[in-house]
Length: 69
Image (cartoon, rainbow, N blue to C red):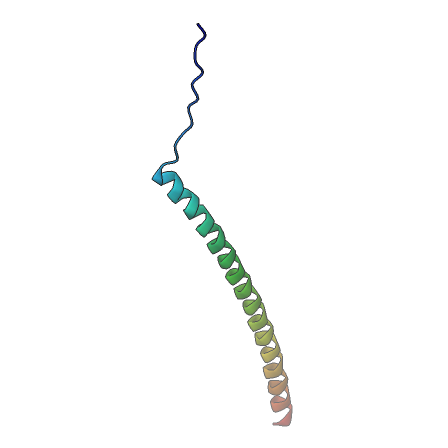
């Protein structure tokens, strides 16, 4: 007599299914978070450039005012 081969396949649990769904949702959320973070970086750089330009204008006006008095 030959022994029967038994295959053991793990049955996915509810926890496994929830983890799979969570990983898909988090992946999408992480992309959105990265995109939002990059947009914030670009906006911060733009504001910094504007501040530097405003500072130069203020210094130029201050220089003209001190020469005029």
